[in-house]
Amino acid sequence: MKKVENIVFLSLVLDLFAFTIPLPLFPRIIEWYTVRESSDPRNLLPRTLGFVAWLRSLFYEPPSNPQRWDVVLLGGLMGSIFSLLQFLVSPRIGSLSDKYGRRRVLLITMVGNILSALMWLKSTTFATFMFSRIIGGLSEGNVQIATAILSDVTTPSQRSRALAQVGIAFAICFCIGPPIGAYFASRPLPASLHTMGVELNIYAVPAAVTIVLLVIETVFLLLFLPETRGLCLNIPRKPITDRSFPSPKERLSQRTSEKRLKLLEGLRRFHFFFLSVFSGMEFTLPFLTFDLFDWSNSQNGALIGSIGILSALLQGGYVRRATAKVGEGRMAKRGIFTCAIGLILLSLVPRFVTTSPATAIRLLQGAAVCLAFTSATVVSSLTSYASLQCDESIDEDTGKPTGHPQLAKGTALGLFRSSGQLGRAIGPLLGENNVSR
Image (tube, rainbow, N blue to C red; front, side, top):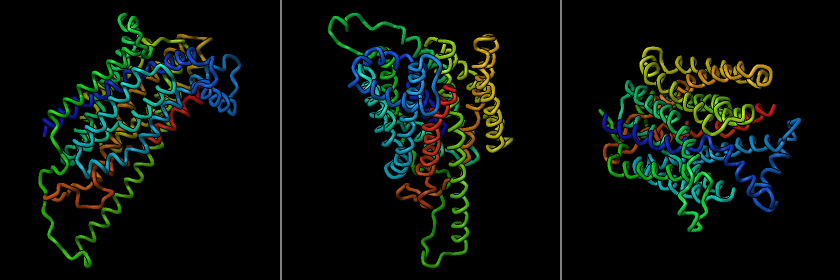
């Protein structure tokens, strides 16, 4: 099963590489659309910015340049829409993978991801760009299904180590993706496209790189990923019993299922709460530096990349080894503690921008270190803990789970991811509101 783990890890790197490329570009993308469309009030962007300005005025009236704050808040809304769509679709993707298989559902979602990137490439209007984000939000399923696949091919004792690879892939791609996105954002389009009259997005080059990565990933999965639903090391065949009179063992199993369902519900609630806070800080960083320091795409890419480098080192060198000793719960608590410190440091940055810029930069760097440790620990630990509550038993003939339907790996982990995505939908709005204050 080590081969399957390697395949999943490589596909995650390709997928998350493509996902992180546009992260440092959002502020400049919105600025570009603002220049193009602000003169016509009938366009979607002026109407959206008008709604955002009204919404912002309910909570805050900046002393100067309110339009810039509206761009910041709109960026938060864009991130929220993507995550809200993930909240809606993740349980469905999980249950479909339980029913039809991980491989088939994953390949279908990859088609949607490619279509989303193609629309970004051609999006010369804000409406088209938002449509591409909607398609991407409804299609993204790689991380969720990868988690289910790794749960399929590992025993509970191996689960934490295997799922740490998801966090490592995130960290690596946060190192590579944003700086690469910022680099290709500065590359001009081929002159031949202009002579042919082809009009593309201002960041068509990063979009093209994203398309190439997604196509490579899809072909790679098609050729090498086997179906894993139903795989298990030792699968006991359950005897056929009269369900009208459950045995004492079956009654005990039912009570155990109820406890696990309650524990999963508690984990989902905490996952939602944590990501509501954490993703607000995470998504705010490019907009904070854009507004306070007027950082370029390259500078924002370097900041996000440095967070990814540190997170990758922590994941590979510390978290994978320490979790087996201290447990998933304690490791998550350590990450939450550093998150609190990071929030405090980040809240102090605006106070020193004008009086002591060097101090403001140091505070920002300290917050980035805390963000890296939190990124390396909390979500991966919670996900591993949630996967341990899922049913391991399956039907040998059909390959489908035989236990409680809400404890099937695809369904349970889909609901768990859905709760986190709802937090990610709310978090950017909370974060951008804090920046505006």
